[in-house]
Image: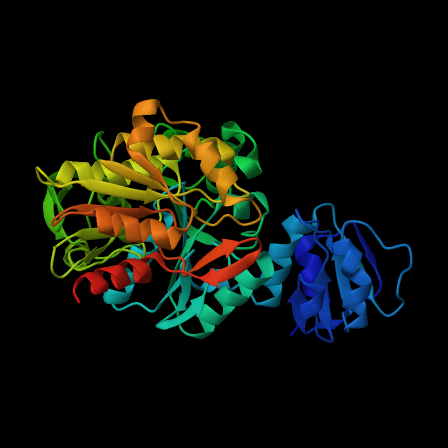
Amino acid sequence: MTQLSHIVAEVSPLQVTGPAAVPVTAVCLDSRTVVPGALFLALRGTQSDGHAFIDAAIAKGAVAVLCETLPENLNPGVTYLVVADAAAAAGPAAAVFYNHPSRHMQVTGVTGTNGKTTTATLLYRLFTSLGHRCGLISTVSNFIGDAEEAATHTTPDAASLQNLLSRMQAAGCTHVFMEVSSHAVHQKRIGGIQFAGGIFTNITHDHLDYHQTFDEYIRVKKSFFDGLPATAFALTNIDDKRGGVMLQNTPAQVATYSLRSPATFKGRVLENNLTGLVLDINGLEVHCRLVGIFNAYNLLAVYGTALLLEQDKTEVLAALSNLLGAPGRFETFMSPADKILGIVDYAHTPDALINVVATINQLRKEGQQLITVVGCGGDRDKAKRPIMAQVACEHSNRAILTADNPRSEQPEDILNDMEAGLSLAQRRKSLRITDRREAIKTAVALAQPNDIILIAGKGHEAYQEIAGKRYDFDDRKVLAGFFEEMNR
């Protein structure tokens, strides 16, 4: 519980109607979760406007409302805080209520198109292995110390995020590693968080259904670094051509990592095979269990972050050698009898898919065939659909186009968009199987001993979303089940 006056002092509203000396018991964005004594944050969202639910929040016991426009009929028992931008004020207001939890921990944000989940997860595991109690906020799941919680968004809403950070602080966490999505930055969900550092992995065309243009997508990513404090660090992948752009206006301490250019943390790949990587990092050799050049970049980011957070270099290198990747990120399975290698990966952008298939093609032996199963999500960026199909066909011996999460779209329409990008030769290498389970089953049936099957797009997800409903579906379990059937 806190006094509303403390929140008023933090958000500096344009107008306060009603008393500020009011105790607040909760901060809520959803009127359905309001409890007596709550402050209701009336935000204008992409799907609905919180102003339409002010009366409902008051009926459930809200004693204060933060809004951009005063309702026509004011409730005399409620205090109204009028602000210019409710989304921008929501995070700071929630941070005050929860006593600024980020100020009592070292919070590091990871942003970029690809590699966010793996980098954040590796950091969580690394620092945990070094003896720290840590929090993780990721697409896959959230962790408070050793306790796992389901994740509903890559980055939660402002009030939920501050609540989660508060619980991490209460559990004794000293370090928190979190994915920072472009949606979260644009919607100002990370407001009120004091970051100890920010990491940029890379940027490629994605989420243009939301941001409309690539330039706007870049601008939003960059604004995260623009907002870091001078006490923080900003670590960027300087090999990405926008890596330097991210740091142009940041007040934070600048650091870089690279496999190709001079950098603060310079890496060199000594060995790369399907059992792992051997890296030289700033002249020191380390054996890692992760595979591929894209993971070499992730490991460099993790190493650099650990040193920027003042960890011992020798201990960090020793811990890196034992780390495993995030669930559904180049996760491997082997059929017992025929030794068919199955790889499940979250790659759902053209660049991520290219990275995965390029890694496999670099490492597969002569005679090993690559069969790629891939789809594209519904209600998302349509421009990448033909490109995803092209990548799969161009870099695989066989490609099977199938459903991903169709959401409200017809799967056949999505597959039509994918096939539109294929040449006649590429069409001859591809199959179109709408049912994802049947697509995976067909890939297993087509594979010969020692071949490789890549199932791309869903990774860790344990569901398939069709026509607005979620059905149980996990690529990893489905693939493992078909491999088990082969062994009977």
